[in-house]
Length: 459
Ligand SMILES: Cc1ncc(COP(=O)(O)O)c(C=O)c1O
Ligand SMILES: N[C@@H](CCCC[NH3+])C(=O)O
Image (cartoon, rainbow, N blue to C red; front, side):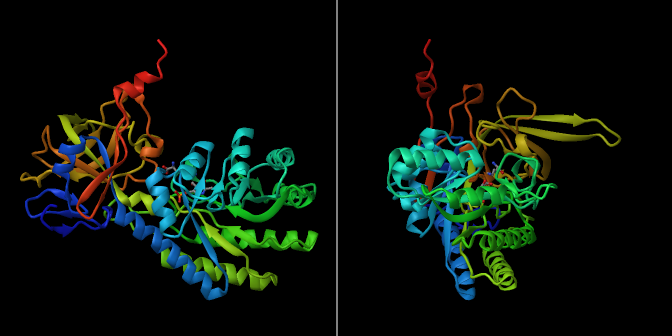
């Protein structure tokens, strides 16, 4: 255990402190000791922070929706980061797990979750994935196309047994989120079934699919699903989407007499990546959403549905920092009307462990982890070791002017879509995930080795 220090605050996890001798520690573990034991780069995951964020979302939503008279299920969206350990923690904190592929489903099952506590998403599920989900008895399959309604029905027919619980993913037309690639409810993208009615007066794709599910004896219509995007910092989009989905539910009721029991409002709750960012507050979003749902149902005269949500980033994103070792340090003069010097600080990872800056232009923060700097701060760009000039970890950050090879550097808020989107570009082994809790560390995903990489090579 390192000496206690002062808490760092966002965007660091709640257990991150700077100790009196200047090093960073998380959950009582000095990051210098952690680097010595586990090497760098490494993802360092604060378990207590993960658990408290999972609880905060569950309790906030349970409380808000109990207030209007209905229940809530919170599904942890495993795409953000999934391992056996985190699936178990999520489950222990009263969450279910949302999976998007057969691989994620396999992890949730390996963690010991029962099928009933797992959902399966995916815009292009294979027959094998559908079959595996049915065999596991998943609590819900979220269908994403009309063709998939038929394929799930056929799979149930072939297997025999109970009708499969199905949700239909719809697109509400609400455009929300940080980047075009992570915004998912506008029309011109691959997810979901549009609620927009065609000009010829025929049914919308969403209503067509809902009615197709109702008509199939092999399927049980469990709910309507709407996910509007990711890293959303303005909650108003959720409310608009909730209104639209309640309208769709009422339309189905009046056309068919079928009342959809559940509505999933998706994930997408935004977090702080930089010290100045204002993350979404779970209690505030939960209250706003509960009153939006209550208002919509009252206006439509429909009973309240049971609600579910699927946060991923908001649970795991802030829990983790990536710990790197600084290598090459270079000053580059940037020409222009007012030339300036930018310090390029290279670390021992890069776009293979965090693709988000290169893919979305995502901003991150960084600080020295092995000491505090003595020199005045300089404008720095943290870059990786890959063969791309776009291999940027932090576009712009002020680092102590004496940053030098051998320093440890920590980048906070890398828990979501970091390890889960990591690659082996340039044959770089992927870093381990080291969970820290109460002064001890445990590897929950081990570092890849060169042998792991070569094991796939058939010569
Ligand atoms: C259907 C669905 N649910 C949940 C999520 C999780 O999103 P986030 O990690 O932003 O909460 C996503 C990803 O955007 C998604 O596509
Ligand atoms: N991978 C994206 C989020 C995708 C959300 C999944 N639908 C990100 O890093 O922000």
